[in-house]
Length: 249
Image (cartoon, rainbow, N blue to C red; front, top):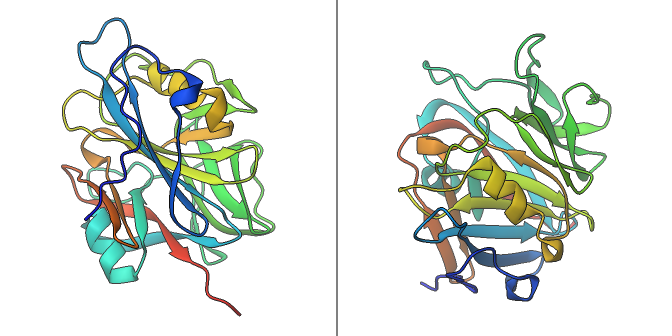
């Protein structure tokens, strides 16, 4: 199996020229970047996948029992899966869930004030603040927090911004592509501040980004055309984002 690491940089804050994408298939690109600030000894790798939504379908994957990204990818036939939003001690996901145009779970009226909604609206990906989200045209959606990037700028007033731990998340670039990412480590990780700085690297061209559940829940599975990556989580989770090749009509 081929590990799609295409860039590993071991000094502080890589330059734009070191962002490089490889394509194992139509509408799919991979990249690995490394981030190191002046206070850390070693760099942290971040694995990214970029998808063209014209060719790749995004679906919310939710089942009652807790499971892993690899297990649900294999059972659902997805070539890529990432953990999604936070959940309570009983394993029930928090926040809005829309799947296949059906409202599975409503947005809570209170709490999650810094949250955003990743959704497919009229077949295009968006990340909205919870206060600006509307349902018409939405086929898939999940709610998580905090939003990290909005209109190409870092969001402010993020709690625990300097806490370092494994991270995972989703972004939409200025070309309308979907990017998912996860830190490739069980030790350390990134702060949300460092993650914002990494995501704002100009050559990533990111317009908006949303943090997904991190820490022990952070996990990503990718297996396509003899190219694979498996970032294992330390906890099973209930909710995922899955990615599939669109079938020709």
